[in-house]
Length: 200
Image (cartoon, rainbow, N blue to C red; front, side):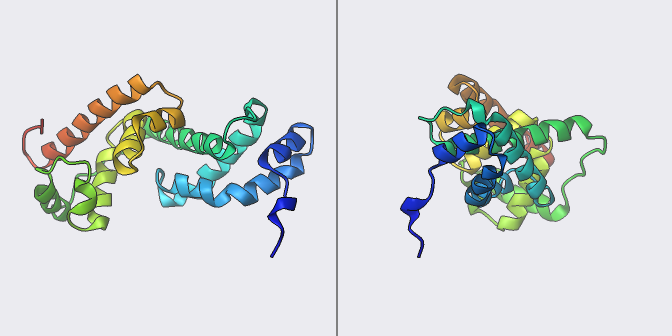
């Protein structure tokens, strides 16, 4: 077993990179690759995870000089990963040309069983996880990148408003307002797809 005390700290590695040792970034990649890919995997399609994670690391590398040593590097990197996912959806929505498909009959039936449940856990507790994710993806694709990220962070991942604000680089007030509005939009989309009125 290796003696971990002999390993350089994140701060030491970062300083070496800033001083011109670009190869030292490989240590950051090795240490945090799974962490970053885990975050990205929760926010972008599976076939885009590797490329988006790569983009996040490029951003991190380019921004290392702005990292303040007293900050938690893991959290700083998490924030970059979340913002890279946010930008992925902004670009994706801008370039979108194909109209979104409608829900299948199977998904409609699933929705009718959960639509009356307005708790935050409704989508995770009722019915099939696979159907829940497919219906959510369909609805999230109809929202803006901002709405999508707030819903995923606050309602699906259970982050606090403060935590989500830090990860996205927004104010807590902005996240609170966006959180309320995006949830109403999501319910309107889902209830509208079953022919019902908007859930209050």
